[in-house]
Image (cartoon, rainbow, N blue to C red; front, top):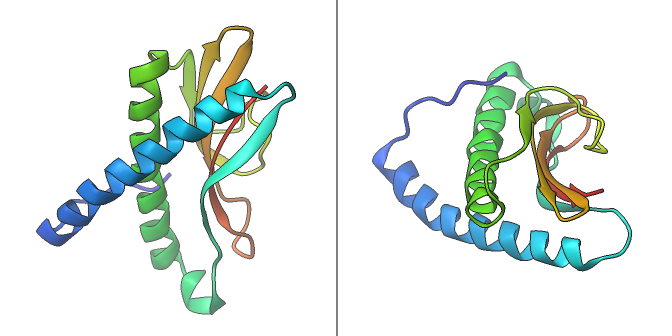
Amino acid sequence: MCRVGAMSPDERITGIWETHQMSDEALELAERLLEEDAGQLEELRVHMLEGDDDAQDEALEELCAEFERDFDRVVATLSEKYGAPARTGEEDDDVVELNGVFRFAVWPVGRKLLYAAAAHEDRELPMLLMSGYR
């Protein structure tokens, strides 16, 4: 699992703006997903790795740290509306329909299970921040 380091003042300013944008999108997506009849899975953020430089360990660790910060923002936002997650983890979960999950949170909402997950299956595949329900 990647560890998030200290942010510079410029990163904090950018992070404040990104927090509001990511939070709004996550909440809107969750509300839209929960209105659907069948289970859905939608992207909040996707990063395609480009070239060998992106796939180096240091670059992947930095990207993982970004996705973990975004994941934490999504969890905080969804927790404000739906309460604390029923469970969280750092590995695959039966509810989350993704491979390579490195963070997830699940909320029961009525008869459905809403979830958010960060995943990266392999160096050749994109890093994902997804939301869905079952």
